[in-house]
Image 1: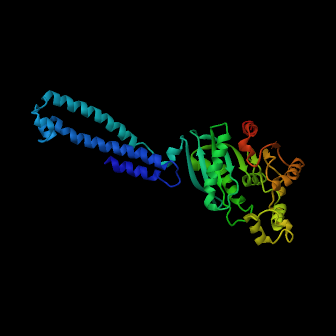
Image 2: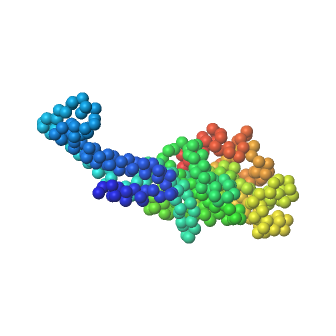
Length: 365
C-alpha cells in the first residue's frame, strides 16, 4: 500500500525542467526497492521456524544428502523470529517516514540547493531561465546574459554555459544565479531586450513568491551581446550594480557597412537589418539607433565595463569612442573601466585581475 503512495509523490518531481530528476528518481526507486526486499525477506524467513531444515533446503539439497536434518529448537525459533521482527520493524519505520515526508517540488526547493530550468512570464512575455540556487532562502541575485549564438536551439545551452562561467569566477557561494536564455533567431538585433526586461522584472517582483525566497540585492552581468543587453537594461531599470564584459556590437552602422563593402564576412545580424531597413547608406539612423553607442546616457546604476584590448578590430575601432561618451555622461551613476592588455574577448573569465575587480565590485555594494 505504501509503494503506490511513494510513486504518486515521485511523479511530480520528474518534470523535464529539473536537471536533478534522474537523481531524485533513483533515490525514491531505492526506497521502493528496499521495501520490496523487506517483503521478500519476510516471506522467505518463514521456513526458518518449520519443523525441519529439509523443508527449507529441499529434498535434493546437499545438506539433506549428507543427513543433516536436525530441526531448530523452539527457543531458537522464537529468538530468531524476535530478532528478525525487531530489525525489520526498525527498517519499516525508517522507510515509512522517508516516504511520508512532504516532498512536493515547492518544499524541496525551499531551503535546498538546486539547479533547474524554468519558463517565466511577465507582462505577457515569456522566456526560459536557468536558476542556480544555493542552500538558503535569503538571497542576493546575479542575473547573467550569454553572448550571441544565432540559433534558438542553442540558447539554453548557452545560458547554462555562461552561468557556469560566471559561477566559476564568483567568490561568493551564497548568491542565486539566474541565467536568461533570451531568443535571437529571426529577431532584429536588440529586439530581445523585451525578453531580458521581462526576466529582470520577474526577479524583482515575482521570484519571491514563485521560488519561495527573499530577494535582496540584484546584480546584472553580461558577456558580449549579453554585455550590450545589461547596459541597455541599466538605462531602463535600477539595480544594485551591472557588469559588462566586451559589450557589443558598439557600432552597427560601422560593422554592417564593412560587411556591405566586403571587408569582413557577412553575418545574420546585418543581413536582417538590411532586409528591414535597406543598406547603411540608405538608412544609417536605423543602424545607429540599435548600436550600443546610442545608449551611453542615463545609466541608472553603477556599472563596471571590462574590455580586453586584443578584442576584434571592429570592437576596438569603436571602444575609445564608447568610453569617451560614457565619461562625458552627466546623468549616469558611477562608471568603472577595466582595460586588460594581452587579453581578448573573454578577458573577464581569463584574467585574475578581472576576477578580483569583478568580485570587489559586487562585494562593495
